[in-house]
Length: 153
View 1: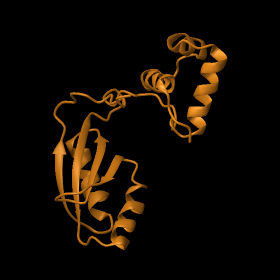
View 2: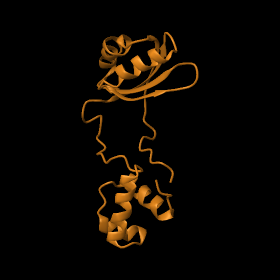
View 3: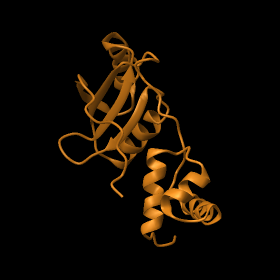
View 4: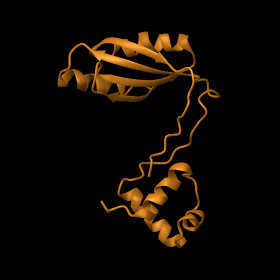
């Protein structure tokens, strides 16, 4: 991988805010020719600094109005239990994110569902049936204060 210079970081910051920016507009904003800006962007993609481009969708308009975070405590903290849980949760489409964490529980799960009834179904039918799950704690989000999260380049 190559070292990032100031221009690379500016390109990455711009792409975080507008992944659909044209090469001409990107070049103008960073003070390069379109060819040079395009080459840098391709290198950043090839080197893995940019992992993809997606559209941000409005979850409320699509019927996923309730965001929930769930602490998951496993019955044992052994490599095989961790592996079985991780493999199973990767196949749960309701799970947006899952992170193994240090502290008083093992995993933090982020999900979006239609409402509390849908969450109850997800909890009973999916989450509690995953391998090794002993206990969960649920935190329903009342207000999303900040969710755009670009990296501070």
